[in-house]
Length: 305
Ligand code: PSU
Ligand code: MN
Image: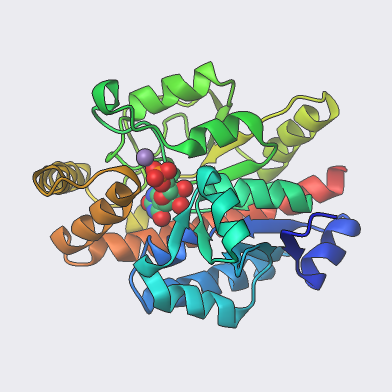
């Protein structure tokens, strides 16, 4: 027994009975979107996972416990606290657990909680990656190392072009992380369906993805997989507008000296203002789209194992 791990009864029963479960992160709630849209989105993501036949397991650190399957009240609490909650990646865990503190889990920490609870599929918006200029700043998200070591499949809408997508793909290749395109040959770039970069493999059905996850498990291969799911056409933002906004947001961040863990939330907020809120509407839709795909993959996977 791990005294720092709490698994809800619903999630524990579903995992024990090999029913489909989808893990969900909490940094997207506290740091990725403003209140109240963050709470509304987190609750509709959970509802979407249920509608597609899986149990949602939103993960967060609450009073020093890594909680897998938090309540609606806890989601609301994290959403209202927003940026004042600790953004918790792998390196933050020891101190937050020891102190009995709260933390919103990034992709890396959510993968850790999911793996501890026996959950294989996790849906989110975007992952962290290699930042532009990382050649000198060395700003590379711990999400990539976690994908390299932890056995959880992450469904996302690719990564935002606030990152260097080419270097992010190189890093994932070095670390042995398969990058799969769902019904696409091209890596999606979060708000936009295309990035100009290819994926490693295109798979067109949730069952083909589940078969790859299953093969990895049966073969005893460790590490995660990345499933990239393009934003639905109707909500995609024009590439030229997005790249101008992102360039502007990055230059505002650098003139304000923003760096480290604060950079991603800062850029997201700037982009939201620069697009007059349109990026937030797109962000919400792509997360829902990933929740649907995550649930379908989890359903297919539980039929195989
Ligand atoms: N990208 C988004 N929204 C987010 C994040 C990334 O579009 O909310 C969050 C995720 O929790 C991700 C984290 O795991 O930022 C990466 O932060 P860092 O680069 O500091 O590791
Ligand atoms: Mn970083």
